[in-house]
Amino acid sequence: MDILALQLLLGIVFLTVVFLHISKKDFGAVIAYSIQSLAMVAILFFSFLQTHDISLLYIVAMTLLVKVVLAPIFFVRLVKKYALVFSVSTYLNTPLTLIIIAALTAIAHSQKLFSLTNIVPVNHAMLALALSTILLALFLIVNRRGALSQIIGILSFENGIVAFGIFAGLEQSFGLQMGIIFNILLWLIIATAFVSMLYKHFGSLNVTSMKQLTD
Image (tube, rainbow, N blue to C red; front, side, top):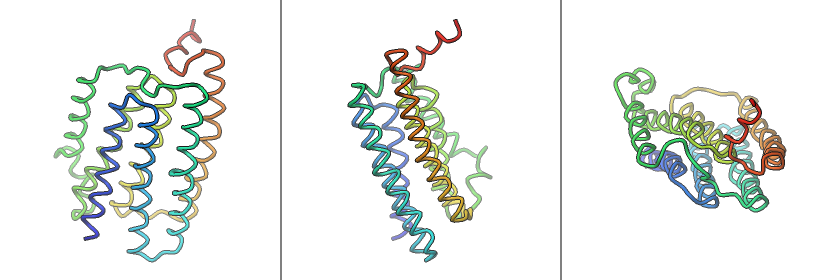
């Protein structure tokens, strides 16, 4: 039952990243990231139930606070303040985007990366799905032109790495995990200031407008 639940949760994380690629609504994207982070909290909680390591419970609580509560509030405020549309534009159109999503997913499940996704043989399928999530999050950062979507892509990339580490059985200290969460919180604060300055200077959060800096 635990394996099936973990597979379902990881599937949700993967599907939310796919949804972020095709989403045209700002609030929909924020909700998708919230669901993704909530699924990650549940995966971390399953790890706590298996190990009974009390430090994991603190990590679960902090992850819930920062990723599921504070980060979405940050995004919603940006959307309301600047009347943002999440998907301003992409470098590739939707059909090409879907083709690359399928290709990256196939690569993650291919024999070329088998040695990486078979670190823990019993978790091979979940490691391949976590690797797919990482690759798709990287593609999201590259393909989107909006600063807000790139921020969500970076946070989704981090969620993918955490998921891969969990299913690969990589041990991470409590201090390291808390440091990562603190860095995410600090990064959100810095990103708020960056987005504000970007919008005030260029009147847009489309990062291609910054090409003027090279002129």
